[in-house]
Length: 317
Length: 259
Ligand SMILES: Cc1cc2nc3c(=O)[nH]c(=O)nc-3n(C[C@H](O)[C@H](O)[C@H](O)COP(=O)(O)OP(=O)(O)OC[C@H]3O[C@@H](n4cnc5c(N)ncnc54)[C@H](O)[C@@H]3O)c2cc1C
Ligand SMILES: Cc1cc2nc3c(=O)[nH]c(=O)nc-3n(C[C@H](O)[C@H](O)[C@H](O)COP(=O)(O)OP(=O)(O)OC[C@H]3O[C@@H](n4cnc5c(N)ncnc54)[C@H](O)[C@@H]3O)c2cc1C
Image 1 (tube, each protein chain N blue to C red):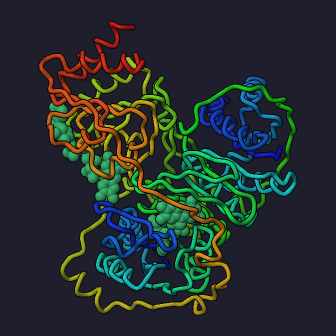
Image 2 (tube, chains in turn brown, blue; image 1 turned 135 degrees about the horizontal axis):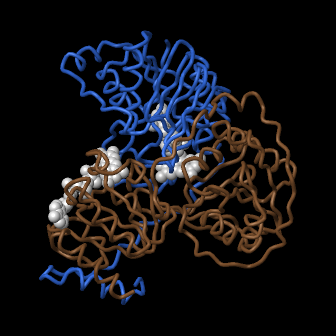
Image 3 (cartoon, rainbow over the protein chains, first blue to last red; image 1 turned 30 degrees about the vertical axis):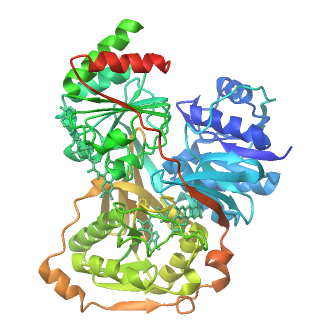
């Protein structure tokens, strides 16, 4: 079957879940080859990629690739596309990987779809647009299709592939060295899963009341092994950092379970969470629009309901 | 410094947005057109950079005739002049076509710095700034929550999942901004009046030296095959908290095997 390149998302040498999703998806449509760009490749990473079906693993782990913004990774993929003539290139629909996809599209003169929630035969993409209001089928009509797939869109399934490693050397061009990364600043993250990848997200809104009160949201998240999210009212007030914002101008999440506490459910918030499988709302206003989406809702004070819920979950474990 | 800020008109997110049933493109007549919110932050940042370093701010918009309202809004905020790329041949362009058309126009009008929003609220591809950097062969400084310029050196904080990267480059460059970078100003009455007199140059495809066979719906690199309204979510259960709301929620979670 035809080869599909899957750009690996990794952090501190660990392969991220979304990559396993992309490999699972690529197996249904062709034969996946993983592409590792940047430092941190290890036998563990190789084993993980093979476990989820990578037949080949192209490894370009020169430090230089990560020293510049986006462009070297696009060059690497362009080189592989011209050498291997794959049927398609899949990347995760993260901010950076979409940028890589965009630059690659120009280099190889191919179409790009930036936010697929599924892929069907014939490389037909399912997209969910306008905040989940409209479902679209789209496809690339010129060149080698490049598709960014939203995290959590595909349940992962292991199925061993050969995982044959092939080293790739890239000469990063001068043009790709324009924007130098001089420092990476890591802000506290804790042990929680990453927002876009998490199976469960617990989000707090203005109703939480203060930065200190976010501890109740965090406690519930921790009892469920969930990520914490926030509405824009919260990040604007500085109660929680911007990278945790869910919605139109924040992250788009598609978890199995989304719990919204003290969030009214404005259309711009819904745009980031409407495709969650199960939604729970806790809000003291029975008229809050978030209840229109909720599979289960509680009209009440979150400061009563959320701690009780956390306690009950902990008890049941 | 010659700063060009790319501004897009988008349908108001508060209204129902639709695709057209005839050609599967965005129905721009169905909803009110407003300035893409992140473009307001881009305009604001461009104005602040001009105020600090001198120069001129030019608004660049590709869009139908009605996008003129959005251009006026950016001019009312304080931009000096505008270029409106408007031509029926551009209708239905995908990101490859759009980035090509904007890059050609930027080459034509010249720039030291191009500022964009990091994402639009309608198409939400979030890739245009990176693609302009690629097409113009200039540094990509995207997802900035802070921009600093010193002579011809520019540095930004690029927002990441773990915090931010500090990125340095030399001008000319392309920057895109996130919403936490600043607080956009409201146009003053004086600004609104002044905007009416500011020059807006209209360019067609030929004026901007855009090859018409690289833009528009028929020449796109991708297509929308079909679309349908998403089925509404089934109504859920809503209970009133009688002192047992947390317990009831836990029971629901257990019934769905989350706990
Ligand atoms: C272009 C644009 C982009 C935007 N992008 C985003 C985005 O990315 N993400 C986003 O979230 N928003 C976004 N917004 C803002 C959005 O419109 C809303 O303003 C925002 O989502 C409101 O946040 P909230 O629900 O926390 O606050 P509110 O709307 O103020 O709602 C607070 C809710 O908490 C409830 N409440 C209060 N106290 C309690 C209590 N003790 N217990 C239980 N419930 C309580 C209230 O009944 C109310 O429903 C955007 C807006 C625009 C115009
Ligand atoms: C729902 C929907 C989904 C789409 N999906 C795809 C897709 O998957 N692949 C594809 O190739 N095309 C897609 N398109 C087409 C795409 O909208 C256009 O190419 C669009 O002009 C550029 O994309 P964007 O608005 O998403 O750019 P973004 O990268 O999200 O916008 C960022 C910034 O670019 C600037 N900008 C964007 N457009 C203009 C403009 N016209 N004039 C001036 N500045 C501008 C603004 O500063 C804006 O803040 C889609 C369109 C729609 C309506």
